Image (cartoon, rainbow, N blue to C red; front, side):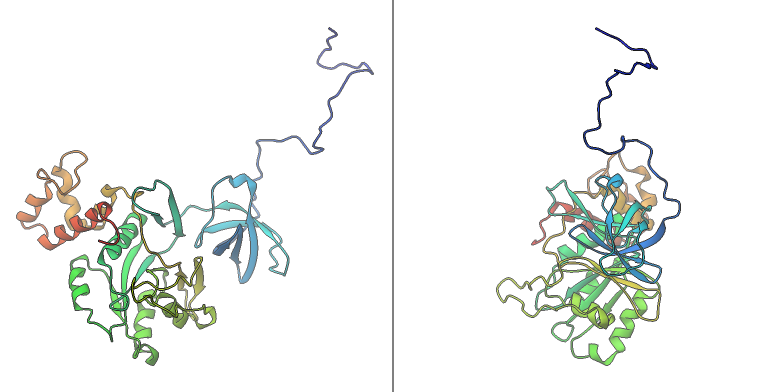
Length: 336
């Protein structure tokens, strides 16, 4: 067998052609230091709408990002055609570190977690007081997901002209969750809308709620130019409305630095991804009392040190009850 040295100069040496006709692959990736910063406004079948400065740019994810996906609210680095003109396409080459993440799973047995929104400051949990009836367990689950993901929860209670908000407000009073109560008749006069604006001022707020509660109607009132078709029917048997929002969408509030993110209506909110040990961080008056807890304490067992902490007067017993109720939501079905 004929062998050649490292630098053969024979004329008959064979060189294998590159069948694909492209350049050899390399592990060195460009740093894209000149990339522009943008915010993802919505995602639709692999195409992302990104706000770059004051322009709306269509983009796709670069191959080097692998399976890492950008979601609404993500801050991203974008290269390519950033003109925003029709039929142009830019490329997302980097997803910046997230300050918060709202995640959920299909149910508590599903290990696959889905990131719904990134970098939101607040989670507005929209709940109708009637038609359809409120679902406290779903509210609890959304609060747990907010605490786990680094968002501040707020309650937006709609249709107060049909039922009183007193019972719901009493249930969540010990959590010190900000809230606003709206009605269908008075919402058009602007006073209730102004109270909602106060809660959203200077924040990025994700709106979540199951179908028929008036979530998208509320978002449309806050951002008229971003109107979507609202729920026109609530099933009289199931109490559920038709899904009218099919993908998350970020919309700016006029005249402020505030953003609202409308998310699709949910029928369940799985918490498989939630580590119960992180929920305690939302209860600073109780967290200090966990130092005496046994390892991997669920905070709802006979040896839990929080019982003595409360008995010694360091925290309100109602706060401990609220904590344990929220931790228990992971073991319950949404319909309970």
